Figure 1 (tube, rainbow, N blue to C red):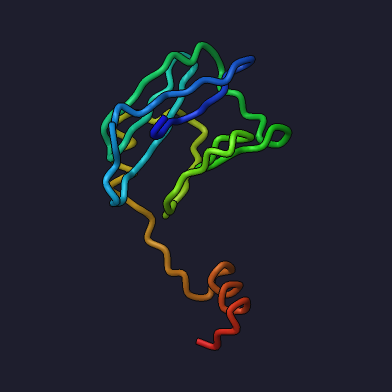
Figure 2: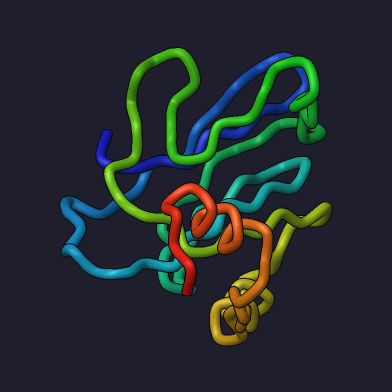
Length: 126
């Protein structure tokens, strides 16, 4: 599989798989969304894949863990960079996906924990 979105309902784990044959080495905006009936995978604001969900989303990250950019236990890892990660408690519509894509987060990293920690680890004084 080239790329997919794994999701879980009460009692089963399912996937939506991309329709792309290949990806160019450029940035893509990926969204996975799920309702009780359907899961959707969007790439760059356009619906790429859809799968039947068949029940409530299973949110058991505390006991089962959560993988981002990897297939848990299978050794399949995403070979790339993730710039932003957002998690919502509702299924997004296609319009909401596009609106979120166009309103990317603007973050000033100066003085933030990860920036400060990175400087400490690299002994940088900048």
